[in-house]
Length: 142
Image (cartoon, rainbow, N blue to C red):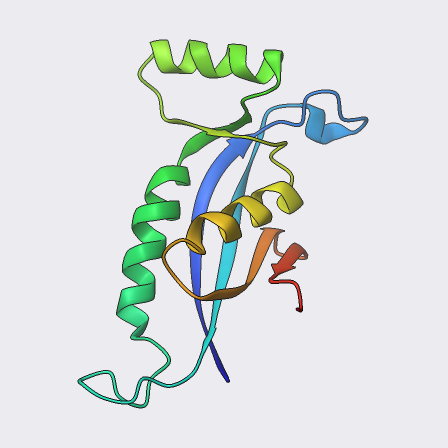
């Protein structure tokens, strides 16, 4: 089994309504995202002896994640206050993206993993919220 990875970056803002700390306020991050793919080598064709072409990973991650989240207000669709801000921003034709969970590094990592797993053999997601703080989410061992 081989593992390869590709790194991405996107900027977004969010808040953690109800959090007992400064992240309760609206703020932004430059997120760094590492997508790890795990699989056997391709045995034939132009991608022989590769796990996957990095360009294919880039295309999927860009379309499914980066284009959706970059320069958007990320919010928990189940939170009334965060949703109210999203409605206002939407009325102003600003970019928003709803998560089915809190927009913690942990919640976002699992969401990204689950989303990309529909298209890629993802084995791990690592999401940096700051240059020194990250969350890692990986496929559970069977």
